[in-house]
Length: 385
Image (cartoon, rainbow, N blue to C red):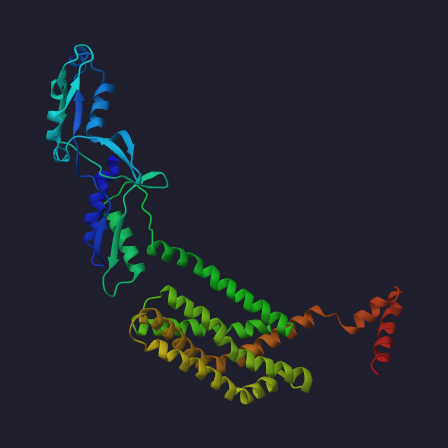
């Protein structure tokens, strides 16, 4: 409690000096006037007065003690014992309180054996966080300030003033939600990419071609970030949602080309070079049509104004920026990645697949070394037709 009384106002003053914050307030109420009663026990004992009797008398005067109850035909009423409300407004009422002495039966003024100290201040209320006393400081952001920038400024201010390690500072409300969302975003994006890879792998029955399709995602992310930087927008939670949407939108360009190329290889017997070339020629118009449909759908979000536009505009900028850059790059990079990964896959299969002479030789019983060569050659030649 003593540390909160000392450091709460210090942190409040440090935050009020930050240009990123405004409307700073605190729930710390440590300046409540209080009256401390010091009982002279020796003097009270001479009158036969115990501390419990003093406490009961004060509760009768200020505690609203119910002493009776009566009923009417419609209602019931409680009788409350207290001093006149006009006398409850200050500590001067304590000077008019009397306590009946059990020894003599006389009324003894409270000031006879009680000394009042009204110079101290105390808590009006004490807030708690996880069973520990806590002070909450609330704030708003100034115009044009991102929440992440404000959080970094607050941490820097706490370090500068030298706040002790025994005080644990945490964020609540919107600041805590922002931190939680940023902490889970990398896992969310990684999980989305893994799910897309698994679905594409099952669709094409290949470990290689899903990587070709996923190679279009970096250009989309770079385009979205460049658009946000160009128009001075922060990487907010809404912008991250737009990047996640791009994962599903951008990869359709590669899917349209790879799907046609694989079909041409398997059913028409074309080489990978011819198949991907035909895919680029025949699928160019559908790719442009779908990309323009998604891009034009994001422009109203990017140019919107009015209530709630601050949430829609980052989403529109990320979608438009990611589609513009990825559309321009992936038309050239996807065929190249497809050819290189196809050659890599073929090279790996040749290294893992044994030769036909070795397979035929292993199917026969062991023979002497001088007859082994002729046996392999005869079997290999016979198998050619």
